Amino acid sequence: MSRKKEEPLPQIEGYEPVQRTISILAANIWAVVLMVVAGGVGWWLTKWIKPDAALAVFDMLWLGVMLVVGIVIHELIHGLTWIALTKGRFSHLSFGTMQGAVYCHVDVPMTKRNYIIMALMPGLLTGIVPWLAGIAAGSLLWMLIGAIMIGGAMGDIMIVRTIREETPDTMIYDHPSLVGCYVYRKIENQ
Image 1: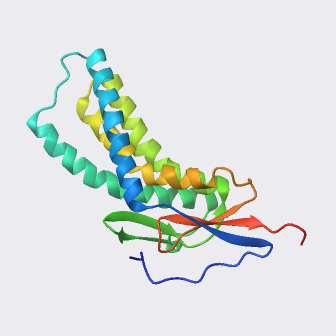
Image 2: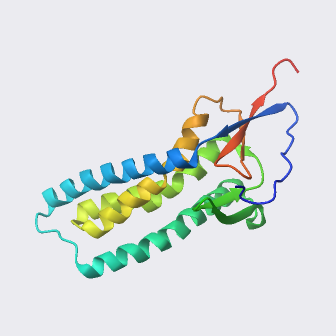
């Protein structure tokens, strides 16, 4: 299933594209594992800091609302991070769903550094920050929101892992129809 109509692959003089994609099923399985681990560790740490920490029925409603809002914010952070790093335009972004997952697609190539920052920023801001803040404040609600959003960033982590050994001069293009990207490697001896 594709995200949108297949767009032509950009050509970058002196570079050749290589596809790097991940399985959405594998990403979802690993996301659940990461959520359970982050939630379990966070629960233990939160209870250690504040033994009387508890979840109220109303907290469960907030948890549901915050997760829906968090998914939207997660994708917006991808796009806004790219805009901030590259001075790009919002018109280069598209948002949608693919196989039950929400996505943000950038239709122009970027540096490896910018791609990694863009990919990981939502996990940091919507996952790690509320997870740590929840633990520090003794709030099981915020710790759980963070744990779930950390798990929600697993696909991004897996994509970054596929490009970790690429050289710094590698250009990256967000894949238009699969979960992943194209890496543009510099052609030697040109």
